[in-house]
Image (cartoon, rainbow over all chains, first blue to last red; front, side, top):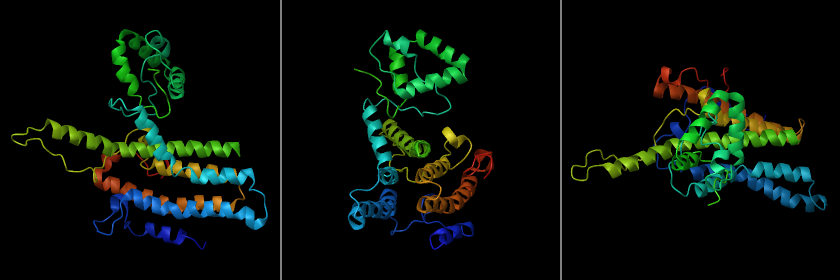
Length: 174
Length: 137
């Protein structure tokens, strides 16, 4: 147990924790993002260094695929949130207000069959999952939403649909 | 191994999503401040609260797992690294240590964080939410 567990366990007996919401005002404070990256850096830097030098040291032509997969699993969570944010901000370039997307309410936007008649529309994977879940879990609600979407004008739907704020879904052709 | 990768990806995705829910609090607060500043009466300066900053804006998020716990991003991170351990195999000591270290470091933080939420918002607002494990702790 020669690692950080003993230090971490101190948290049970003291309320002091010099970061985030319990940080104190100090000129030695480091901005959160920089501090976080500094904290993460030794881990992934060491791993990448070892993975780059190990094959030569052990005389392997290259590391096994499994090691490479695990290495990438370890490293890629660090830039991923930032990449997600970039994708989303690109999708939100229309500057329509982003609704708070909530997981348990998978019903936003009209049914695609309705939309296809009006203008080219590519329902995203997330969109399909939402409807699939909705029809399974809340069939009455789903039907009502579909009915309602047929009554409203397509202009309303545009805003509603962008409100979905999908991370990975491409929502419109044009 | 595939199952492990799937659990890892699920944990990571949920982690990012819940983290983003937290960030959205301050993004929304910044938007509101901007709006208020724009709508403020320039002659009297009434309603002007721009420049207050959103550094210390706190709210209890409501969506996703935040319905049941205050630290779902911690839980999802544990799920993520449990998946990673699974990929490495149950005998993989570094992966196991990583998860154990995370739990040792983050569990007391979450429990202390729940106390912080109760002090800040009151027992009623926090309600039946647990710190990090739904229904348990």
